[in-house]
Structure formats: structure tokens, C-alpha cells
Image (cartoon, rainbow, N blue to C red):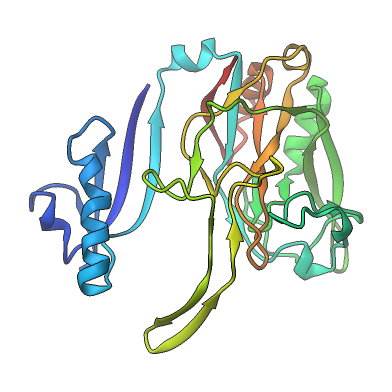
Length: 293
């Protein structure tokens, strides 16, 4: 496996750490750099970012993404795979009239909201993929996906019909009937250098506007959430169900309650699930390796 960090740098300051011919420019404001975790400059990034914030109140980078590339053999030998959903869309079910039970929500981190009605979405908004999710975390799959699951009799998959405002949609909501527990080797944080358990919030001036940020909890003391973003490959505690089922959600969640956003589980699948996706040429799926301990 090869792991790199993709950074979207502020072009005004990229020269502070990188050569002019490194990376790729996106317009005049962003430079994209791929940086190996072993590169000695990796640990200089947060130092420069902090200095710029203090001196000029400007950012060194606008965003980041950890990219992992596996050989076919590595993927083929994995007992469990981390299923990553590539496409995200709006609006959410909440905005379209889907009902939720808020009495089940953790008062600290906002996790564990319970959906109590069929998912309703707006017609014409679902991407033309076989799997996607709303920004609120609801997972949507195509009829083609649903038919393939039924034909292969995969286990651990729950499919329920999705409604549009004017009737049935032809899409399905995907959920897992089985949950697995993440081990403490699973690393989550704000970014690759910030492992804060939360944010105190406050008022900030952005482009002459005052914006208020509420206090947020990323790592719940009750164990419901483990961090804002997943940083490592996931590590799962071994159980009999892993060998008997094909689709799982993690008990612990990542993310934060922020407006329409909610903490979300990590999804896992078997090799049979992966074979179905590849043989049926289903779109929207991406794999990483999950470690079973």
C-alpha cells in the first residue's frame, strides 16, 4: 500500500516549503501537492500553518485528503474492506420531510438520531450512481444495486424504498443490520496534525462579517464518536459475524452535529460484496483495507 497526503495549498505561500515546479496549480490561488507521510516536510506543514495564522491570519492550506493505493493482491487478500462512498449530494431527508426521533440523540455529541419514517428525497437530485449519500449521511442505492443484492443473497444488507415528494422513487435506502466495533488503533482527528476532542466555538470576523460557531464535540466521552475525520485505515475487533455477513456499519461514529450534518458510521463489506460491485459494474464505490484484530 502506498499512502500520500494531498494538500491544496494557498499558492501565495506554497514557496515557503515547496519548489516552484512541484505540484499542480488550480487557477491562480491553489496548488495541489502530494506529500509522502515519510517526507521530512510533512511535519513542517502545521508549523508553517500556525505561523501564518498568527502573523497574517491567513491559511497555508485550504484542504487535505489522505490517498491510499493498493495492489490487486492486497485487496484480494483482505478479510474485510472499508467501503467508501464517493458521491455526496443535497438536500437531505430532513429537508424533504423525513421524520426522526431526536429523543435517542446523545446530548454530548449529537450521535444516534433515529429515523422513524421512510426516507423522502427530492426528485432530480440523486446522482446517477449506484451508491451515493446525502450530506446528512443517508445512503441511497439504485434499483440495479438492489436487484444484484437480492440475486446474490448477500447478508447483513437492509434495503427500504425511498419516496419522492410525488410518489415512489425507484431508489432504495441502504443500511446495515450488523454492527462491528472499532478498536483503539483506529485514528480519527480534525486533520493529520490536529487530534482535538472538540471546539469551543466563538465569534470570528470573516470578510467583515461576524460569524458565530457553536461549541462542538468530536470525541464523545460516552464513546459514540471517535473524531471529526477518519485518518487511518479502520481497525475492527474480530467477531463471528464478520465471517457470516457481507455488510456492516461501525458502532462508533465519525463526524459532528453541525446544522444538517450528523455523525456517521464507517461502512464495511465482504469480498462477496466487492465481487458483486465489480462484476455488475456498479458505480460510486471505492475500497480501502480494514484490519481485523
